[in-house]
Image (cartoon, rainbow, N blue to C red; front, side, top):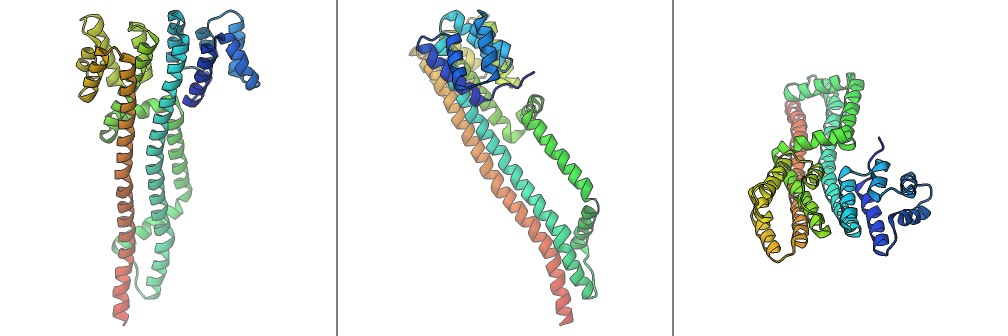
Length: 345
């Protein structure tokens, strides 16, 4: 199976197709124009071939096997509702926001990992390179390292002796990180872990709520009705177990219990507090799509704020931890050395 397109690629593609659609150019003609600018693009080539056979746009997207199922489903509904240009524009906006969220999460994950790696490197150099020099000094003075410093020296000797094993373990950790970062299965497992991890639980919920608000905004803006099919597609987009259950509860309230959408969203636990009030006011004013888009933006802003707050807490914690570790190592050597020197004096 081919790799799905990135958020940035999806956003650019749908933005260009939306502009062409608004200009009265058919999807087949639009893809041909894009192919003229992007020579030998295999995805556009395949799409053009399928469209030239008389297939619909969503069938062409599905045949390429690089577009998310949510996208092909929304494009199909947009074609059937005669609102394809609106759907394409909304999809472009949606994936621009998704790219912003992805970049925020990426920076929040990579920075602490680099800090931890730096800490490990510094400690490794201290126990394998610096402590042996002090051990040599102590032996020349007729004594030896003991206590914490002696234990660290022994640990450094073990690390030196098994450095190849250490490198293998490090390589496995890098591969494990790449698995969780670069593969769909790994990202799913990482997301499941982060949903229950206290420092990131609220952030994951905000991301899911923002995505659902974004999906509802797209549907309202495009005139797409709330159906079991569209809710299933939205659940695939959200990728959050608790939120998926909340979406099912929301749809049941609307469909089976005839609860209005604002109350159903609040009762299902999807939106609350300020967002529930904002949503109710927007529905009363007949601006459902605008208020949902605004809620999606607010959730993204809240997510960014929580991520930066988390990074702001992690950075000084790691710096303090590194300072304490290095300080303890140096003091465990320097204090005995001072005692030996004073006895010699």
